[in-house]
Length: 497
Image (tube, rainbow, N blue to C red; front, top):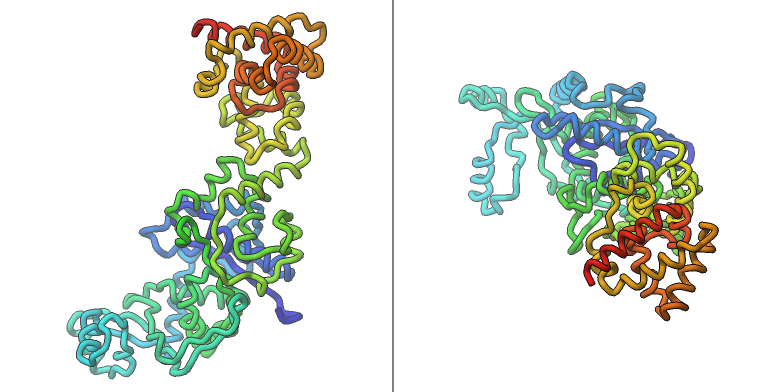
């Protein structure tokens, strides 16, 4: 980036559907690019397609950026000097710009139908699917009047320059589109309704955007944007073309582009599972960029310090769920235990064992239990499932069916009976005392290997085969509740005998 340039980057999604991880990766790279250069991050909503746009999707976009901490300097709910920041509120702006382009001869009326274009290609021996052939560039007023008399409505097309269009892509290096390979394209319908090829670059020009980072699937539209930006500059709008960087595609299974219809692309599914923003953003940053060859885990502050758009790879980046989980687990381990416990609270509520704000007693129990599961959790819902047994009322407790079937069968009865006998005599209920009693009763007394000895006890007490450390869990659960659950497990096992 040239020294002294003020970077203005933007994120401009359409409010359709649920935010997906590929879209958020684009937002992250633009945000990091702006923050790295001390520039401005603009958030704009492209909501001119009333048939597809929705209020729910708009709210989801705001929710997604807020949850992730990708703060914007200008945009909805923040304002700024270039508003409004929703395209549906900018129609007069588009109409005025289109008028200037038409008046200057940069844009012309085109009346050819798709059938006529295809017929001309066939007559000339060309591929009929080549698209528009620029045939209406020099229509006379008489010809236009004749078309109108037939009841035809025109579209407005930009007159593409008769030269190569070359630009230096921030990710891919020099890119050239040969003269004549990009036909004149439609900016607006005959009634003046603006289309995306007009509104998107026009808004960028009016908002002073300097750097456009977007998916490589949009690369073919770049020569059209450059031509339009040059035309806008000639009529007094904007400062001409921007810097472009086309980001690698995010792919899924089979190296296909990860579309918003793919289940693993839904951003909010990761929040529901208990990914933390730091972990998910860290992983998304790795989809095309790295902070160092031997380092995968970093904070967003470290990313901002190190981010260099010219170091983004042009190769497709495959979304790897296992790696995303590993990155998230690393961020969970890095949290202060008090913060980890606070973040687990909503997931305990989702498990149905906490309602609303936790009580002081529940908070104290969670604070004591959190260190037992923090190192073992991949996502926050893991922690909530492992800790559920501590919070569920006794009348609502039941071991998971599969765990009970494998570990609380008839052969578990002598194990649980011996465990009860050993524990019932304990003068002090502590993890250390519990460990000693269980090992004496089951390993020494029954001659069982630890895995065989403790599995029935773990399932009877926690309801799961995966739980926090057993002795500390039983200490937190307390003597009465622990013994009651062991008795219930023994009754079940004895009943199967």
